[in-house]
Length: 174
Ligand SMILES: [Zn+2]
Image (cartoon, rainbow, N blue to C red; front, side, top):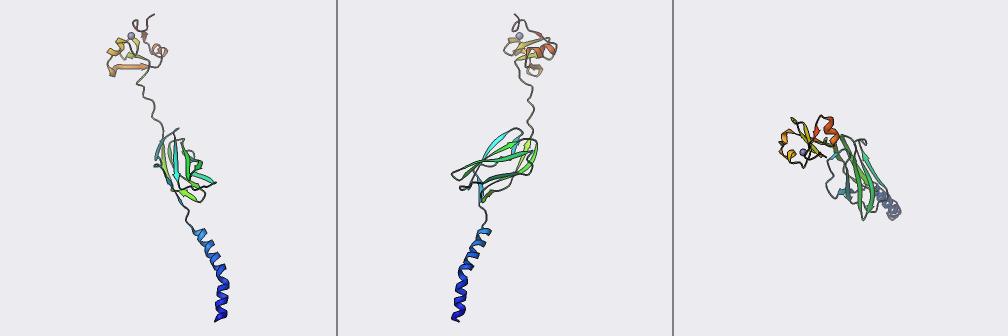
């Protein structure tokens, strides 16, 4: 009886070590929690800073994007346990991004990227009426009399002349 107990006790440190190692391997990695909601939609060309708490003092940073040509998440640095990443949108589409710092990793986030809206042609330095012959500076009295729905805007005097308009003698006359 005593001999068996002694044998069992002799194995105890080894068992504890094995259990400890197993626990370490099975230890779930900590979750990086976003400080602000991760943007779900960006415009191509746009950048956003995304920060996560729970990074500890991790030295190894990584990030993944399922479609790197759509958008990418780049880890920048860890400061006081907070991981700062830069999310850059490149092209229209959808991608799933996530990042990791040491043993901590974030949830996966779907980010969709849309193409920027084309600039509406509603402004310019020169204006004419669709039915008129003259173009004006925007601040010309005559320009103000053109109904909004009839206005044609030009970015330059050359554009207005190319469209067949002549300079107004009041605001553009020499
Ligand atoms: Zn004018």
